[in-house]
Length: 105
Image (cartoon, rainbow, N blue to C red; front, side):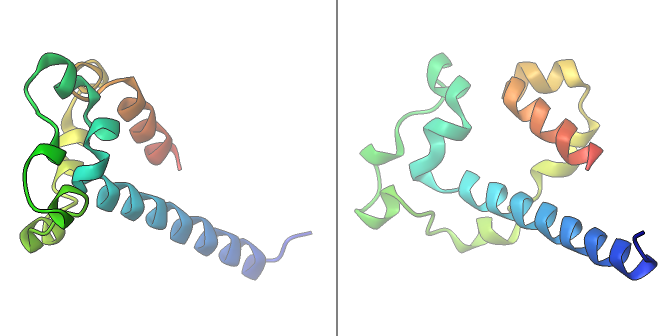
């Protein structure tokens, strides 16, 4: 039978893992090299162009604007206030599923 400390350790591991995945998602999302992965709908509609055609060599792969690293989680409150239908229309089904899994966790 699990003791209270076992449950506490399990909860701490799960919370830290969930936070690590959220942090990785948010940091990878702002890198120009990952734009086609995280914003495919914007490429299809033509509202975004390839980041590889602009910026220096390093700027094509890594976001060099330090201000975006301080505000990289600003999308979370806005996404949580959207209905699921709005979220699917704006960001796609995978984003809606990611948020549903995140909220259930």
